[in-house]
Image 1 (cartoon, each protein chain N blue to C red):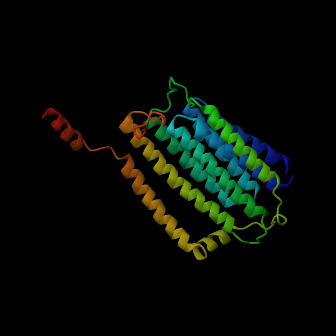
Image 2: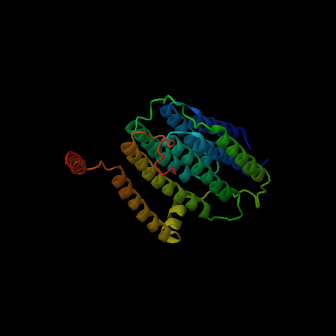
Image 3: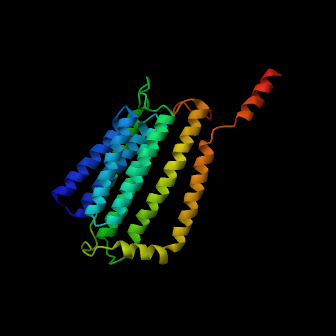
Length: 103
Length: 173
């Protein structure tokens, strides 16, 4: 088993854990925690493929992971601001109780 | 694959599972910080030093603290009476197990195209590429971060008092 396979398996497990958190938790902040785990799994894949790829001296994978981290930070800030706004309006942060659009 | 990687991967996974599983969300965020640190250690083992330290600075230092602040602002630290998981949580668990199966199968079948690149890319070279080859995406990213900052402030802004008094006046009439 090579280093690349180990990284890919760890990334798959991280992604599945984050997905389980997104799909099963009731609190919106816990859902955002799951999203952060999934983004980390994607970044781990970028770095693993950069390390074990065929490119020599090329920083494309690293730069892509760097940009993904910055976009994920922006997403976290906006997402948490949204959760706070929803909490002010509904007095709850549980995603299953925010159901005004339900038909 | 050496022992250090296996240990780091186990710590990372344990932190991630605890972050998803724990009932108290403050404990979950602490477990999340452990998981982020584990990912940073994997970056260091892969030879991406700059990314590892960026991961610690941004994720452990900023995102985890941001989540704790949002948690305290929304009283998320209290464990709710109705449980922390959805009523049909097993559907989500089944879906994520299926995703884990597919991703694990694809990852185990992966064959590295070339030998691992032994040369370590220096931070100096990375910075030079960022401001030459990737300068336009860098500027776009700066605009995105500014927009996200303004948007987050606007979204979390406390609603004005005059609005409420106008609604109250309507109710009185």
